Image 1 (spheres, one colour):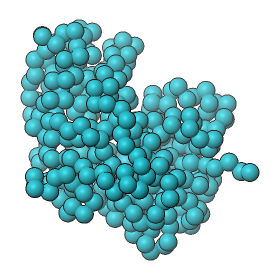
Image 2 (cartoon, helix red, strand yellow; image 1 turned 180 degrees about the vertical axis):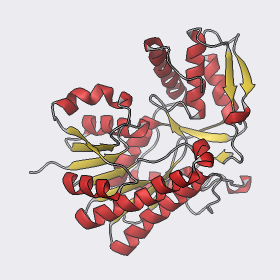
Image 3 (cartoon, one colour; image 1 turned 180 degrees about the horizontal axis):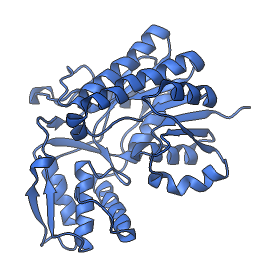
Image 4 (cartoon, helix red, strand yellow; image 1 turned 90 degrees about the horizontal axis):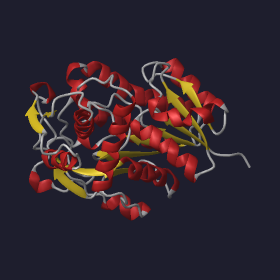
Length: 338
């Protein structure tokens, strides 16, 4: 019997790399990971021996902005399962590079799905949108369910509205098995340092190593977020495509621990032996023109369908994130202070 093949776009990112780890540990599937030729391999460095031995995991090079490359990798990999995770994923950057964000996220999704329609129409496909599509939500609509109106608060969020709608269009128009997710805040080891909780953890690790003064620079600390662990997130994505997938469905997924960004920062600081020395300073460059400040999900629909529930505690996630940055900082001092 031929083994199943999973195709992961954005395998070198935080989520893609953890998804590869999960699938390698919990399935016998072969995995094809798409990345750009210049993508850093730090997040999958521990998987390089498998790649070199051509053992279950291989990389293919493609760019969401290049239709020919996307067509080639889909035709070559012939996946049974597709996890479309690749994106320009940083909201702050989208304010200065909106067109690149739209091109990568909206048109890139369309290119992936069109290639699949042409070459692998029967694949089970996950299109990853974002909770940012809901944007500015009034308090009376919390927790946010799937029927909440889209009110995007950044070009990134607008691009993810497009991603969401393109996925649902292909499911309905071409009878493809495509499900869309709106994952709320998820973090943990390998989280990029442009995101709030990860830059906090990195700065604390640099303070502990005496590479910077004991000051953590921050943006808006008033946003309310519900935090999930990335390892719970990838388990949810696996269940999405394997547990009675329903073409065209869309789901909110997220954690159960809600707090302000300020509370999250204070918890990270409390884990440091230098907690009594650390000060907090607002950096205007870290502030967005507008912010999605109430991000609390109603995940009942997804939980009812799959039985999924988050298992990793907020405290464990924060500890693992800080330890990840401590390890990286111990290995090298060459880090930007962003």
